[in-house]
Image 1 (cartoon, rainbow, N blue to C red):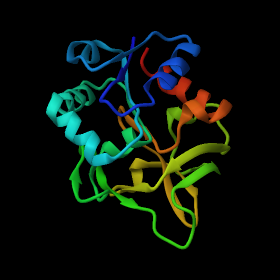
Image 2: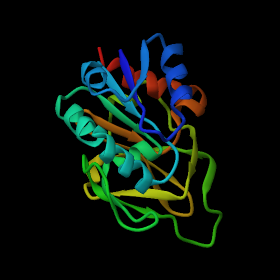
Image 3: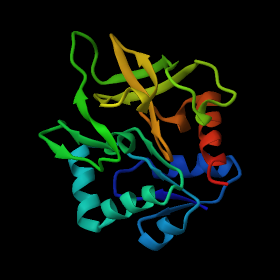
Image 4: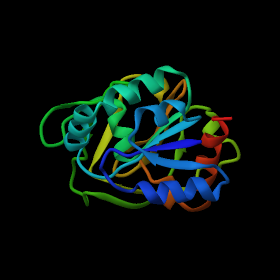
Length: 200
């Protein structure tokens, strides 16, 4: 069973449907026991970093997610969920994250359209089981902030949007995608399937 962690930030059911289309049982839940019992967990989300961390802290889900990551079972953050994996964010003030991956989430800055919204080609930086059978194809992004990992080895793929932008991160059993795999066509579904295979 795959736990889709519900922390009040939306975009849960499209992820659940994508997991189910790939033949896996999925459960949208905020219950500690159900999350800890899951074979894999996904932290999706759209919205503001500070609001998300406040909710995670108030409900005890912050500690649950950190404990889940410590079990060694696969954990995937998507979009805001990926950003929450990092140490901190400067979105609307300074906010502490889950600190599962060292680094900061900062605003995109420049004379170009923000938010970054649309299809951009991935550039693989490291080998990863997530990339099995994948080519450097396009994925669908919607975001105004981007993660800056402290450790080069944690950056699995980036994309170019007026400069390099972190697209996929990972270390050990913890992974994240800035883009939405459930909205990124065949590439996104294959990447999601590769993650789900890690839960077996």
